[in-house]
Image 1: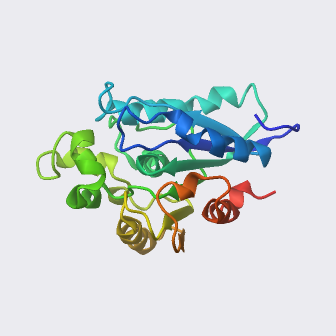
Image 2: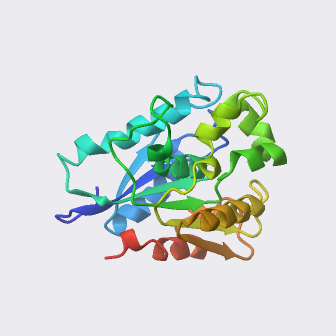
Image 3: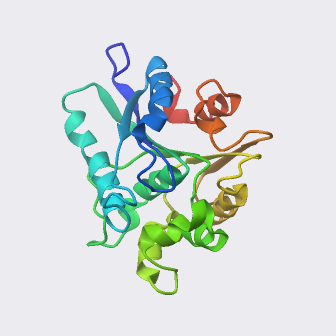
Length: 236
């Protein structure tokens, strides 16, 4: 929790790692410290991942539950949930967008009927379109593993899990991607941004030359600072 009386804007921080168990929430520790130093409360969440009981639908259910828990936390701590920003990196970028889209899900779908809704999204080299991620074989075909099959075999899972299929999200979105990213192709962000704008969503796309997949979560990196500056909810 940052210093001061608050209420503080809140970052719901979701780590990436291809939804696989190897990567954990400590990947985002330095980023969270930087957020706290700037007066932003960081809620760094974990979720079940591939190889650890995750995948469809448990990874999504866990992220939804962690988001809704902020309702209880805000009764005990000076948190301003009207300035709740979902911040996700890589596969966590997918989950951040999906969190913002939960109100678009049909009742009964995993994660539907949210208690807490985010006000905006900051996506850092995110896998924002699962159809495109599947087509490109992103993260060594992790989308296939996450949803348990290709789009033509499990279409409902793609419809309920891919942010691109749930547009418009109805909240501002900042999409950040380094031009030198070799892990998640920037074209995924570009294609999602085009669809999101066409749906009526407010999109701010940041592309800085020479930055790679992990520069976007390095607190000392100019691309991270540019990302922070682009999120109105974080500004004092």
